[in-house]
Amino acid sequence: MTAETRTERTLSSASNEYIWDVAGEAGSHPYLLPAVTAELQRLRARCVLDLGCGNGTFTAQLLKAGYDITGMDHSSSGIALAQREYPRIPFARHDLHDELPAAHAGKYDAVVAVEVIEHLLLPRRLMAAATAALRPGGALVITTPYHGYLKNLALAMTGKFDEHWAPLRDYGHVKFFSRRTLTQLFEEFGYRDIAFRTAGRVPPLAKSMVVSGIKPA
Image (tube, rainbow, N blue to C red):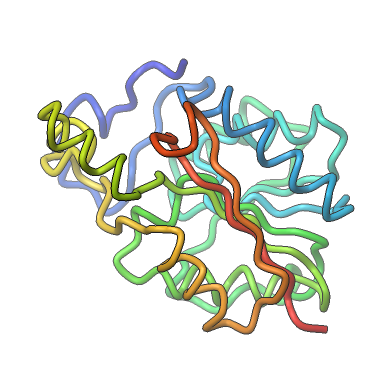
């Protein structure tokens, strides 16, 4: 499991980005990697963009799994750490407020965004960047914490809402998607063949959900 980053340690860092200062995997990677790679295999993707790659550890795990992988993130500290730790992988800094660089447009068989969209006040900007990066017929795979009736009830009954939502941490979770709302977002951008699976724990109490869809040709 990744040691706590500076942003996690200090809660409020008064920084204009999430500060990455430690390498290593997140606690979610052991259950998300099999789910994401299963989707990529099902979708027959080879050239993949990890959008919101953080410190690059998940990107490196996808490289090890055999994918032609590129990482992209808003955090300059995250990209610097990723480039140092994984020099074989191309990484690029990109702000979702800006247009996707032309070199990445229409290039990828798949875009993955792992536990990213819940941190964004404007999640449609991630959708727009991912759609621009995909070739026609390419696949978008998004993971985000799962929220369903039983899961939310369990959080409430066990007093875990504050721990789960972490409202005092800068760059924490600001969007809480259900299967219905994330599917609706995919449909808004014209994706077809939308698929859903859960990851971590039994489905009604799943830690995360994995949603994928195909960009129109």
